[in-house]
Length: 228
Image (cartoon, rainbow, N blue to C red; front, side, top):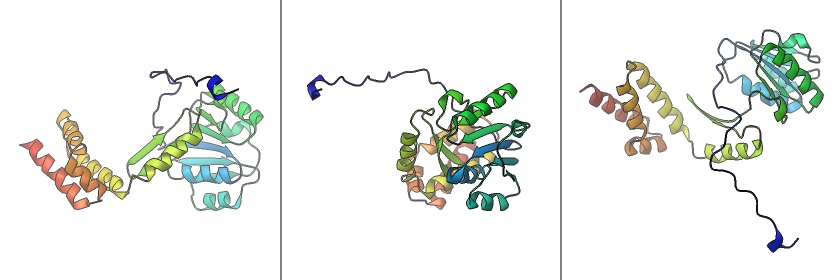
């Protein structure tokens, strides 16, 4: 087919009904079940350890050394070195599967749905209740990028591009704003003040330069003006 005969790609609609609503899952006091293998399993466990799970159950018949090392350094992790069983999903709040075994994913999905437990399966959209996100952690800020499981490679690329422009100033700005927010009573005035500071050019310049003192002065000035 010549170039002139090639059919143009369909243009994506400007509006669409997304299949997944983006929310952050609260991990405090909850239990995660990871069913994963090899180096990817170790990577999944390392990511899970960055969150405030009460308990992490990791099931793999032959875990790699890094998985064993991570499990040994955090008492929240229970490593079960065997094939996953239906009993493993009992009492957990979220199940993540990261294997190349379609049959296993379908079995896990059935066990989870019978108990209404949210389930994620790697590269198997038909079984997913929730999707993995590409993450950029910056202190209290956690930027999450997802394609709804349709283009994870592109989400990962966007994460790398954005991360290059999010230096330590973002982390310190988030910590300072959280500190200021906690020091004030909940009110529309507090919300308006913090929004105004976040859009102030002077504050943003201090953020880009990681000028902690400058950011603090901008916040203190804004609090004084709010109380006048």
